[in-house]
Picture 1 (cartoon, one colour):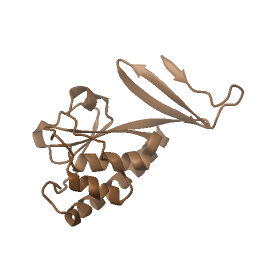
Picture 2: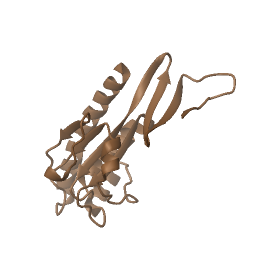
Picture 3: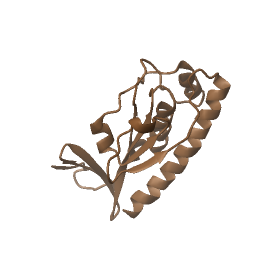
Length: 173
């Protein structure tokens, strides 16, 4: 099934979002002019999904908006977000206070194009054909705000580089 959204009944906008359902997973693309640009799905995984992966997901969502699908999960999810992480993100204008730790699922990992692990070790599933990155990052658990800011800023730098890479890759696809 392919749904095409028209900006106007008589005029086709510069880009049209197309969504196709294939065997239960979604393939998302845009048409910009005459070029088809795919929309990447990124999954950030850490142990508790209470700090690093939440910051990374929020930063990529903030940066990429509608051009990337972002999820985060934990191999052993915590019961709540690290409040210092929430505070550090609020400092830069990103509110994650309504987020919550989510479990890593087979389906969530299967749907992702890029899986970025952040200290979950052997508990992350491996699927053929996926791009895997392992970001060695300090865990913000138990750290003060100054230390969490350093971790946040490191994640933000990596997320910007990832987004630029995905944008180049998707425009070539």
